[in-house]
Length: 533
Image 1: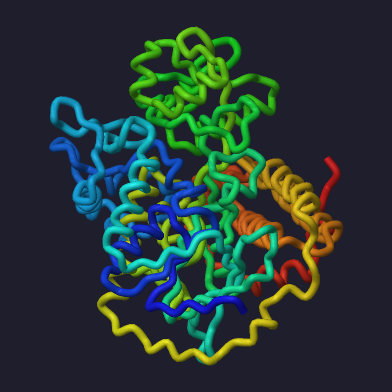
Image 2: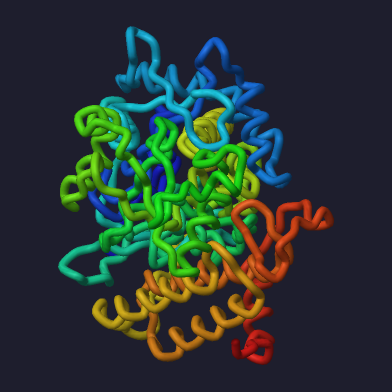
């Protein structure tokens, strides 16, 4: 073992949730571990839409609450929803206090309208660059306070537990000259998982390719409860020009009047939902998906905008279009639904604690129930801030245990055999992503979910020795697919062609653990149930 770190709290992840909990834990000694350079490759930094908050005089937290509940398809935790909507203005004040400058017009906050919001309530920073600027300010604040030790270029592989089955730390490896046997142990009675979502297990995603659910994999392997895994939100307007990952074209563009059309300039959403282009994301994504599988083309129509005004409002989108030589004043913009946000994750209570004592989770790694079966646009950053602060408050109000965990045998955590090469791993990773897109995507059937399990087995068999990344991706993919099989209805972002209606008897959040999945895999019933179509 090369290094041992001891601290009151270890945070895994350096996006908005990880940085916020680190700042809020001041003055406790905190170690924040990130697998890249600080601020790199997090979904937070790529967030375009902004933060939903009822700051306008014509708006209220109760209206924000109602909109969130309505979209969630009956599965949200009302206490969690109330917590984020009532604390939204406090989050805005916190960010302004650390130097975040939200966009303003005539001295008033400039608010965007996004899908399924009844009011303009999305605060932005420099148009569609909210995440980038917020993350920069959070990093500056954390460094200024001086209580955080940042450890970069380390991937976490295991959560350790003591003889009482309580969390005692995490083990990882240092990225150095492609060598993965430089092991490091972070010993702490409190570990916070803030590693982001699962987008990269799909072929089409708006997430960084480093975001593939390792936090869920870590929690599951440690025995933590998981919940709502079947609910994956696909953003309807990802730019479809061959870039990987797919650049996001923020929903705020539609909020400012852009429309969705097919190759014949038909505004197809007019016949599908009364909110037209600003219908909930799952409805818009399914409409686009169905057009595509029927051979149609789908586009975002921004021809009503003047180029200079568009680039001022949406500099990130404008840059992508400019680099792709798309003249948005004259040309339609090709779009495709892409995996964007996961409502499921590690089950936590209202203080962010998992089912394992000392193990916490926040941000997209966790599932508080605030989003139910479908997330209201721009509630994700809000939830990340609110629950990061709640975790810090709970830890700061408790007496930290003396870090007296027994020494661990590091050999128990080393792989028994060498893993496959990065080149071969890349091949199987792409196979996995294709399987998820094809069989566990916008629309699902039991037959296709069974096919997915057969393909997962094939990948594992042919890869033989799995890389850490591929192993995590396979586990998370299997968990999501298993959860999708269990929910025999259509609700929110989970749509079953073989069960197209909502089932009121399934009006509950399904909790899973890794033992249930393993029992299912041992029986291999899916092998016998696949029908050739």
